[in-house]
Image (cartoon, rainbow, N blue to C red):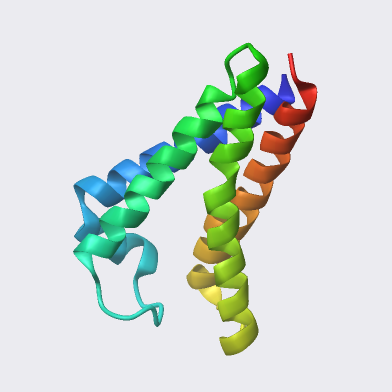
Length: 129
């Protein structure tokens, strides 16, 4: 039950974040990136990442289904956010840990949620059916 709830919540978050990035990249950039030193706003790049988030969320939600493949979908849905988080952790190692709202956005929105997604994806995979 807890695994499926985690898959549902993180999957929906990823899909909604991806749709926000696709529909309103300027607004997403202003709200999420804000004053972080991440370079200029790039519509194309933000939409590319939005597709990745939407695909990740879809994989996590497919993990809610029954059947042997559901666990594989859940685990696959967790892969991209974990790679994204590892990239951010590498940036932290090179440039220092962000502060204030930037730490909350990256720490919770990227690192913690991806780790939780991997955890519930792995647990769903191990459950089988």
